[in-house]
Image (cartoon, rainbow, N blue to C red; front, side, top):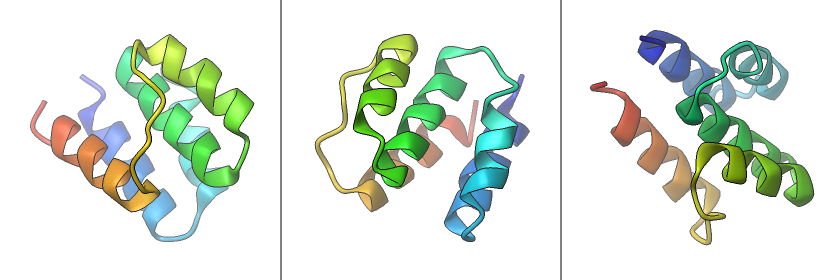
Length: 80
């Protein structure tokens, strides 16, 4: 499982290191990593790239705030 890497990526982004979080998830080829990847590009403001990663994750583009999406991803993945 990649749970530790997912959580590390989310916490790294939360702590202000977007590039570090991106480096973590770009090495993992799973739908959950793609979801985090989408979130990261959404936060970055690259909505076209985010849309690509949401499709790779099999998820709709998020319409809630980035804070709410972060929490949703964290809650979904922390116990996997």
